[in-house]
Image (cartoon, rainbow, N blue to C red; front, top):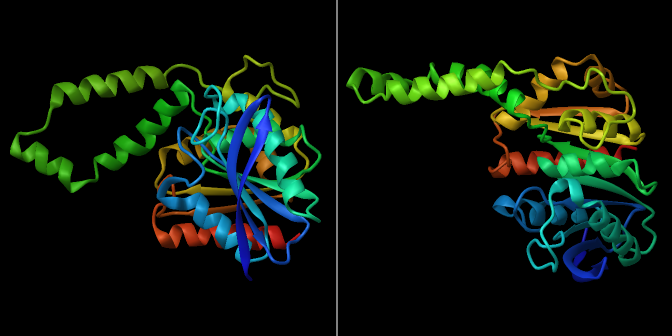
Length: 286
């Protein structure tokens, strides 16, 4: 389907925000707001967000990507992913005005943008779905455990490591210091969300607040995890260790996919295309 891309600007608490809307000639009632994760802007790593928006628009799904305040071309002080609720609301306001007939929005977020989506989703009745990719649930203990479990064990199987050892070029002292530091962090208790209901204090650990966000959001969820990404593995380990995470992620409203060979940002074309296909098919399935 043919589509048109429009440069847009809108206000958020007195700051001018900039973005791009990809609008099909015949738009449906549901659009996708692509939320930026980390210190980047609306094009995305490997042009991922631009390519995703165009792919969705070609399927008849309007898409919008934009820069938070203080990021990319947008004005204002930089914000963390925990502080962008007003930016998301302003973006949805403008998105709905830009696309006549569109009534509801799916928020698509990778890494800490997935966390931002979980924090915001239940606050806006226009948000009907969330696409969460490699959600960021980082704690020092959780990260250390994931590193021990996945990185160090896999490292032992890599021929390059053994070539270093045999050749005498392996830094034993540095490796032991690093291992001791990670093991010490892993020994500290990590949040699992096991004690959280439908609310979490503002100062609660990040995983607990994300669990509360998922519990409070009643719309549909698409979860996509990479197989070769420590962030995704930390999330998987967290979920496996928590009955409440397992119950929420096992609900019928949640669809799950895994790309076993993919890295954190789905940097290869085949991985990006698969994510786009899964996203489009899921949105059109309900």
